[in-house]
Amino acid sequence: MKKKQIAITLGIMCFLLTIALCVQIKTMNSANSTVSQSLADNELRDEVLRMKEKYDNAYRDLANAQKELEKVRQEATQNDSTAEAKEQALRENNMILGRTDVQGEGVEVILEDAASTSSSLNASDQIIHFSDIQLVVNELANAGAEAIEINGQRLVNTSSITCEGNIIRINGERIGTPFYIRAIGSQSRLYGALTRAGSILDAIAYYGNRAEVTKVDNIVISRYSGTLNYEYLKEDK
Image (cartoon, rainbow, N blue to C red; front, side):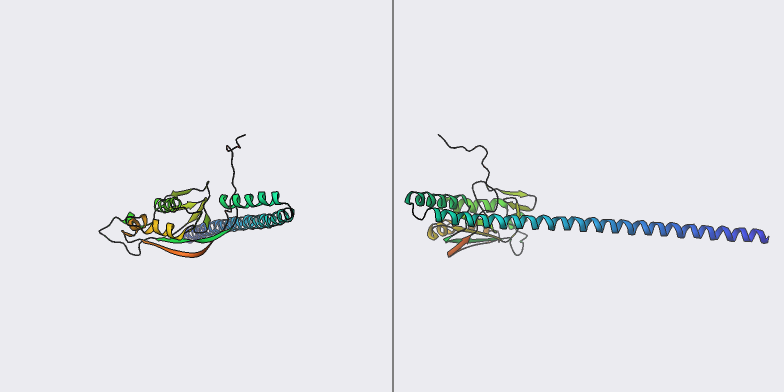
């Protein structure tokens, strides 16, 4: 009988020890998995930071190189009227293409989702869509805007405004509300195009969205930071 009790006791102890070992192994595996995931996240974050640093350095080097090139051009054309005319034409073309920072009078438009929703209106109409932005840009372009920028993104002839679900991208960069659209051009024409009766801003504001336009005496718009590639465009000889 005593041997039987000892056997039962040893069996219970072995069972409990087995359970304890299983729990410990599971805990260790979970901890190792958490550590591995944390290390992977840290490595990914470090890689993103390294790539951003390389991009910032390359962008800074490009800006410095462009300044040096501009200085060389100015020195080379100081005593040559023909070269000066060509240099002036080059500067004007670069402004049109969006390759340089520009400034001038114009307007600033602010678009923002409705602060509060109304049950009597369609909820989709109470947020700013990429099509609203496109219509405002088209209105400005039709009114003679010479340079347009949206949330710091300069629009050029190859720019795109796209929508991916709830995400709006301009020049491939994600932007969000509120949207600040700045345009250089005749204040009276730009402002008049956006404030006339039945304008696109009236249509946007009808649903409670913020749609405002203000005249600005001096707007500064930065140059396009991307690369302009022309694969099919060639000079007609």
